[in-house]
Image (cartoon, rainbow, N blue to C red; front, side):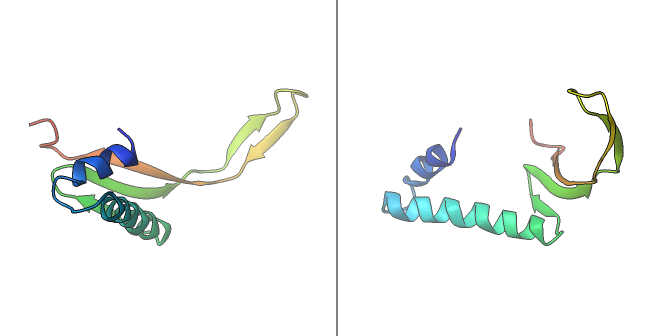
Amino acid sequence: MTKNDIAVALLKILSSKKEADAAVNKVFEEISNALKNGEKVVVTGFGSFNIFETKTKNGRSPKTGEKLFIAPMKKIKFKQSKDFFD
């Protein structure tokens, strides 16, 4: 399912495709902004999104075999709601 598919589904309750696209884009924009600000996003009955930071890791260059460090990075973790499949 894509953002466009969600917008098409919203056409059942909204009057135009333009409004549906704007609504879908606004929802994803707000979720993105909240995650960027370090906030947890909870969608009741669906699940929650949370930001976490990975630790520094030891790695190896595939070309030269040289050891290197992989810097910590932020990632998004999704945990589904208990009643997601009910």
